[in-house]
Length: 110
Length: 114
Image (cartoon, rainbow over all chains, first blue to last red; front, side, top):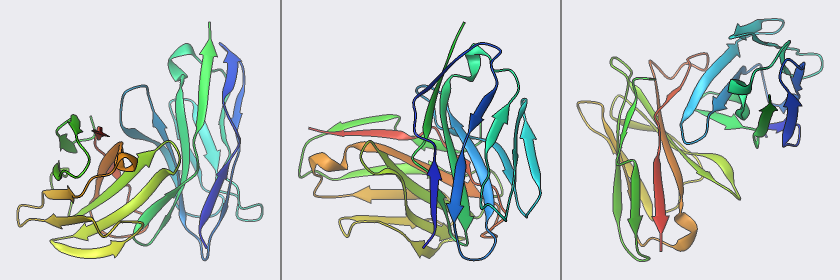
């Protein structure tokens, strides 16, 4: 079946540190891949997406590359800020729905 | 602001009751999706409507039902509520059903069943 596995959280970093949140997926075919972010008390916001192999999605300093050979879509940011503290969800799109990972809670300390 | 609106923001009710959650999609979007976010199950897809017709079903209980109206807004009806139904319910919309289409999420309705 279709599934997404994210690295276990919570993750705590200092401001300006390098961030990687791992995401791997299992799917039939070649799904579109997404990262969503959920700030405290808010809904899900699309952070970035990639629709085919080797595509790189980027937004607000975050990047992720669709790697078909390793079935991965790891999220990276070179220098995190306190305002990046949130829960991050990796997801894949199969025809009629999104399948989400369990979410990774990120806390950035000043 | 995603352009997707959901009402109410919070709902507190008792076991055995029935509630209705409402969603208005982004202007021009034809697809509406409902998701449930709970601590134990994470984010789970419930159901999708496209232009008024049910298109896909996920882990939706028989006590739950939904519909999409001609003006494209959608309602999720939850009946015979149980404590375990307490969760955050999200609505999302997209322009079409295409798998590359981005789904835009509303702020959610937090349901508490006492």
